Image (cartoon, rainbow, N blue to C red):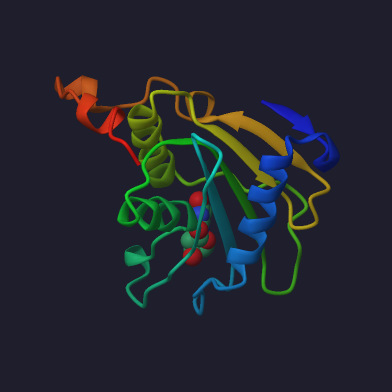
Length: 162
Ligand code: THU
């Protein structure tokens, strides 16, 4: 886990953060009024897929930004990713510390890393991009539970053309 300045970030990751920032404006968040945006960068670095939180009156049915991005990408037939950028803000406040993905999102991102056959890079940023942390799913979810624990071979998905 390391802190990095926006200017020092790989330009592809700068774009991913900017896209995540754009996506969070569309959060459907009448309950928490918390805005989260996520942007996946494809393995070939050609595509960006965004997501934002979509809440529900039955609170636990809420879907986080990270998972909406993954589901959005899967629907487009894109499953191989190098990185995900995540950014958040409150209704009336900017975040002063980075917002890490919740436990359910870590589990889903772990599955993404297994399909992608790499340790998914995770970039977390405050609203104003004055604090940025670069980490990875292995670091945020050590000893993750995945397809191999079930003896399931997902090779077919690892090698699928996109
Ligand atoms: N949220 C996300 O979108 N991603 C996370 O990883 C943490 C939480 C959203 C869900 C809910 O709409 C709001 O933030 C407050 O929990």
